[in-house]
Amino acid sequence: MRRLLTALAVGGVLAIGAATIARAAEPFAHTDRVLISTQGDVAILPGEHADGIVVINGNADVRGEVNTVVVIDGSASLVGARAESVIAINSRIEVGADTVITDKVMRLDSTVHQTGNAVIEGGVTDLAGEFIGAAAVLAPALFLLWLGFGLATIVAALLVAGLAGRQLRAAERLLAGEPVQSFLIGLGAVVFLPIVAILLIVTVIGAPLGVGLLIGAMPLLAFAGYLVAATWIGGWIVRETASRPEEEIERPFLPVLAGVLVLSLIGLVPVLTIVSAVASLLGFGAVIRFAFRTLRGAPRPVAGAPLPLSAPTGA
Image (cartoon, rainbow, N blue to C red; front, side, top):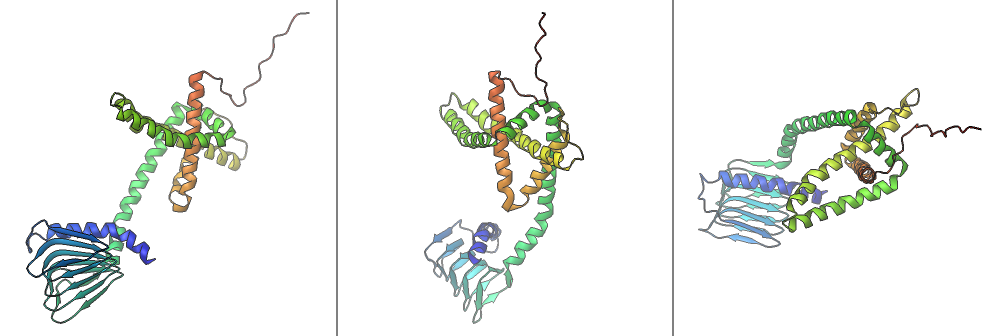
């Protein structure tokens, strides 16, 4: 658990440290000197200055002036030092004699020992509370963002169901009839198409085509595959819950709506995101197979279509 907390906090703490270094220009000298050490030690001797030091799995020996000290999985000793702030994750911090820290010591799963006449003007704060506060602020914004994307997806899905419902149904039947082949084709396309796009971009002449394939065609195919998978899942749900069997209508508004809602809710659960990914790959493969069959002019089966009757012959 400690390692997990450390990994999750490193990025955020480094960002906090960078912002603190930027704010430190007024009270402290600003020399743009930043020292970063992994698996090693850093020493700031008396009379030396650094805007910031970052030590991972090492020790920071600070006896001079540093704007911001960041220590992760290590230790720091400040004796006769001047610093604006100290950030510690899973570390041991010793604030010794004649040391002045003008702002805060921010810690996460760390110990801070203050001895002698050391002064920490901003006090010692726990980063866990800072992260919880930030999460409380970001959570509503992220929810609104998710809700906005979800509504936009539903509107786009219903629009596609209205404009290309027959094609959507045909691709869905292809997926339902041959799911294994559709999955393998979708998986292969996800790997193969970006390689083709990159090779086209490298040739310079084919760069426009490669860029179009990478940022235009693939997202559209992926969205179409997502809708095909949603139609397949939603159609099954409608058939299982309806009082009478679902009719094979050309514009599958209800199956599309049900499938998109189910896949969106599944995507909220981290453990179940693999289900949404597999469904998208199935739909992606079905769309590619349907496109090839359409380009070749191969006949597409229509559900419920009557068999042709032979003309009667005279006696």
